[in-house]
Structure formats: C-alpha cells, structure tokens
Length: 506
Image (cartoon, rainbow, N blue to C red; front, side):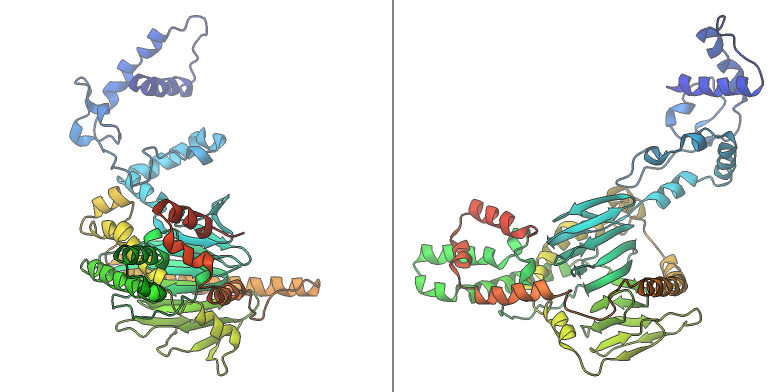
C-alpha cells in the first residue's frame, strides 16, 4: 500500500514537469525506481498519519517528527474523506488541494479539529411514539419508533394525532405533541452542566427536566394514557399488577385482588423513588436548555414547562415547576432587544406574533388548561426515565473526568469554561437570526393570505385532542376484561401484549 501511494506521488511529479511516459517502453520497475529520487528529499517534520510510514530505516524521517492521527470519536470512521458526498471535480482539483494543504500545514492538529467539527453527538432516544413520527437527517427521512437515535442536527416531526416522548442523554424528557416539528441542534457536555439547543418550528412541546426529589404518592390514573404502555416493560403499571397478582394467587389472598390496581400503583411509585435514590448517588450534571421558536426563546435550567407555537400566531408557555436553583427566562425578538425577562410565577404567558411583547394570560382558556392536564400524572414515564438514566446516562457521567475517554467511549467533546461563552454567543446569534426569519415568515404569510391560502394563527385543540379522547376512554374502560386480563398473562404473553399495544397505532 505504501508503494502505491508513493508511486502515485512520483507520477504526479513527472506529469507536472511536462515529461510524458511512452506507452510502449514504460515498465513498472522503471517507474517505481523513481522512489529512490523522491524519498531522500523528505527531511524535517512531516505530517504523515499512519505509524508505519516512518518504519523504514533508510528514511530520513524520525518517529518524533511524525504527526500521529488521534483516535476517532466514538461512532466515527478512521477515514476523513467524505466518500458519500464527494464531488469528483473538486476532489481532482489541484488548486483546491493546494489551498487545503497550506491550511493543514498552518494548523498542526487539523485532523483532530476536523473530526471534532464533523462529529454529530448523540442527543437522545425515542422512548415512545404513538402514531407516526419522522426524523430528517440531512436529505434522508425515516419513520422512527422506540429506541431510535436522535443526533445533533436531526429534525423530529410528529404527524397528525401522533405523540412522542423523547429521552435526552442528560435525563430530561420531551413530550412532542401532534403536528409538531423541532430540530435538535446542539448538545454540549461539561462536568457541571449539559447544555442543549433545540428549535421549535411549530406545535407543542413539554420539556420535563429531571428532579432528584421524591416522587409524590398519587395513585390516580395517568393522564397521558394515550402513550401507554411503554416498550420499557418493567416501567408499566401492568408489570407490577402481574407480579402482585401472581404473589396473591400463590398465597391464597384472593380478597386483595379487588385493590390490585391501587396496590400496584403504590408499588410502582415506591420502585421509582428507590431508583431515584440510587441514581442520585452519582452526581449528574445540571440540565440547561435554550428552546428557540421564531418569536421567542426560553432558557431553562432544572425546570419544566409547556411551550406552543404555530406560524403566524402567538406563542404560549407556562413554567410548571418551582425548584430551588432553577432558571427560567424569556428572550424576545428585535435587533436591539438584548434584555431577558426572568419569570418565577407558574402562570400562562403569551408572546405576540412579532416577538416584541409578552403578557400574562388573564383568562386561561380550556385549550391551555387541558394542555397542562395531559402531563400532570406521568409516573410510568418517570420510572422509565430512571431506568434509562441507569442504563444510558450514568455510563457517560463516569467518564466526565477524562476528556479523551469521554470522546473515545461515548463520542462527546468535553467543554470547559468556553461553554458559557458559547451560550452567550448563541443568545445573541439566535435572537438576530430569528428576528430576520420572523420578518421573512411574516412576508410569506401575507403573500399566502393575499392568494387566498389560509394559515393557522389561532390556538385550537389539535395538540391534545387525540390524547384527551384516549384518556377519557381509558378511565371508562379501566376495569374492562381487556385490561384486567393482563395481570394473568405469562411473561411471553405480556411481552406480546406490549409489542401489540406499545407501538404506533396508525
């Protein structure tokens, strides 16, 4: 392989010198002999990557002068050549090669920087999708479901009457409502904080940061039953009902079966709190989010909130928690609107469509009240979160003391003090960019309106309609035979039931 590389190099010298090689008299051995004229000129510091390029004893390049390429990030290949998007004309351009070669010579660690720039870090996984969910990765689109990866740059979209729950690698949960589109732009890990940048194009999201405190005992039916059961089998209440039913039958305590649902709910919450205590023993970095919409941005630390936006209309949001040390602020639009608004009250607010003003909602409509209702009791999702924290997040946290191991084992770049500078830059950059985008969207909507094409500007029930209907029907049928028979299933039957009922409905 070394001879092929050097022979090609020698060939290029011959061609550029204006000499030609006769087709009839040319012999490979004569051409390979040119190596002896080329190799002695390699004196000084050379930027070769493979270690075996300096192994020959007759070469004048010492091992100390050779730049060894660093190990790729987790998930990257060894080659830095973008084979899937390469352009033949650019690839064969000598002028472009010269420019790139000069730049590489000026930056000794260009390979490491290039790998870092090209790395799309892993942001999270799909916990549940009911209906149809899509991911756009570059020009590629795919339907996704449980355990599908979400990486930096991915756009996630739910179709009509579809709902998704997404687990992020810092332990945060995101519920994506119907007809919603959002892009996962950045995740940046440091030893004390995980910062994430997400853009909401339209629709409704519920951001739910992890809390270390104990989950309250509330055995009332879960409100987002539309998304149940989860494919994380051990998190479902039905799993605890099965365990209790079997133990009661074996012990002859059949009179307790009537209270089985309440007992199972209590057992589920107990298991959740025990797992919380166990996961709290390892310090997980705080979660910090910048959620960007065209007419407003929310910056939240250790906080949960709802946010709704549809193009051409207002935004609505509500802070849902009151935790010690949390941060919750609003950034409006305008090239000179540099001030942020810190909010502590748990109330609904609305932002004007132009992003210049916001105000508290005096009379909360039913559409907003039901939006909050849907995620009021979600103990199964909380338990699934703790299970996945132990499985996916804690292994990452254990490598936060070693930047190299974090990169090689999990594919993350470890940020230091520059993370705060990155945040400050994004606050300014996103405000300016979204102000320009908002003006463009406004012009587009005006043209559509003049052509008689309507667009959604008013808040309606499309973001909760399917979930509310399913919740009400679930309460009505909670003691139906189709529900109660699950507790009597074997492990195999329960697994099949989960597969049938836990995947998308449409």
